Length: 219
Image (cartoon, rainbow, N blue to C red; front, side, top):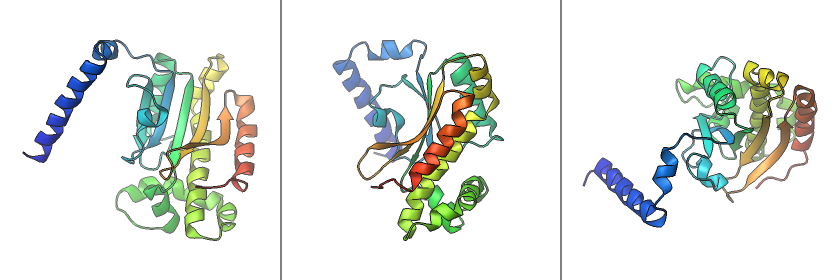
């Protein structure tokens, strides 16, 4: 059996198992989605949004890219945010990085990986901006973990500064943006204190999150 045939067999077995365990599952899933959450995370195959949150398909709208970056020039990510906020009316946007992120490590160390080097320049800019905070750590592994956190904080700030979120807040639409980091070592999500649900609360949240970086214990 070829590798792809094996995947198709797995799919058939999974579908049959789900129908047996929950006969109405696929009928419910086929209805229009109405998620409350948008997850913007890393493309890393070890970080599946629904499983981490313990939610079924249809409950989380998901966008993923290398190193969970939100660039203001990325029409793909901006379109996802706009659709989630304006059409689906999500109430929470979760920007979720993860410790051990290969993209963040490449950006921190200058490791060349190819075309993605251009994309990871966004993370390199975060490292340059917060060089003093990174230098406080004694080891490369701790600097890596800290940069994973700083990258989430900065990308969360970027999401909040998009016209989509700014307009939603201006019309008093309830949508909150949160910065989290996930650990591959224990499966737990850590809050970074970067939570904003209004323009007035954005800068205080950003400053609070940065202040908490130095005090954080890492897995």
